[in-house]
Structure formats: structure tokens, C-alpha cells
Length: 202
Image (cartoon, rainbow, N blue to C red; front, side):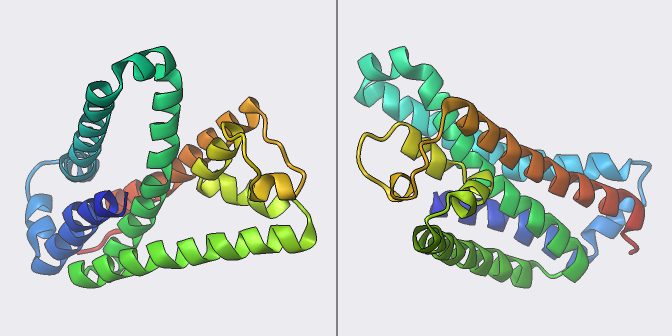
């Protein structure tokens, strides 16, 4: 997943920041093109292609390794990938806004990598906090930003941090966490689109 994130950071955040830094986006704006379409083209070519390659390779590998296991549980497989991709999309949405503000490709890339590790550390702190307070609330909040945690607990049969806080998530809570994470990603991208279309002065 980290390699996948780096690929997105490089192709989109670094690419958009560099294009702004070098004046390439300014050249696009001189053509009779809608700004939203320019940004959509960047997103599809960078993020969309990366996600398509990631899912294609991963699902194909699963079919080759264990077709008898994958086919009966395709819903679980798709839900797992949906939960896994929401976290990178949230970070990408943040970097979209950062790239337009800083207009520096390399700096945006560094911020993306640092943000990834900072959020990983925060995730560990939140887990410890939940254990210390014996409250599931910190983990419930964390699950909205990183739904893979609640998903793994739902399908797990072993003792985990969640069971230590007396929280047994239901399937509806799993779906709400996944949906909530995509809502956050959608809000971030909407802010990015609005800024790119209306507020970005070049």
C-alpha cells in the first residue's frame, strides 16, 4: 500500500505541483477549456490509472492463487479494497489542496510522505488512548478515516484492541465507516475543485 501511495503522490501531487511551478497549468488556462476538466484529466491520468492498475493486479493475483476462495467471497474482497483505498484518497484530497497552495511539486511530495507517517503514528496513539480510557470512541473516530481497522476486527476471530475496549463492530458500522471515509474524501476533492476552478489565481 505504501508503494501505491508513493505512486499516487508522485503522479498527482508532485505532477500537479510541478505543473503549477513551471507554468504548465497557466498554459492550459489560456485554451478554451474548463478548469474543472483540466483537473479531472489530471486526476484520471494519475489517480484513476494508478487505482485501476492496483486493483487489476491485486484481484488477478487473488484469482490465480485461490480462485475457489475468492469467487464465493467476492463481496468481502471488494469491500476490503474499498476500505483500503479510502485512506489513500483522503490523503490525495489533502495533497490536492496543498499542491495548489504551495505550487511546489517536490515540497508537496515530501509533505505527503510525512503526512502518511504522521497519521500512522496518530493511529497508534489513538489506539493506546482507547485502551487507557476503555472507551471505543477514539477507535470509532479512527475507523472513519481508516476503515480497514474496523473491517479487520469485524472479520477477526482473535482478541484485538477493539475487543479490549468492549466494542464489537457490526456490519452496518463497517459500512458506515467506509461510507464516511469516502464522504470525507469527496468533501476534500470538492474543496480542491472549487479552489482550482474559482480561487486559483495564476
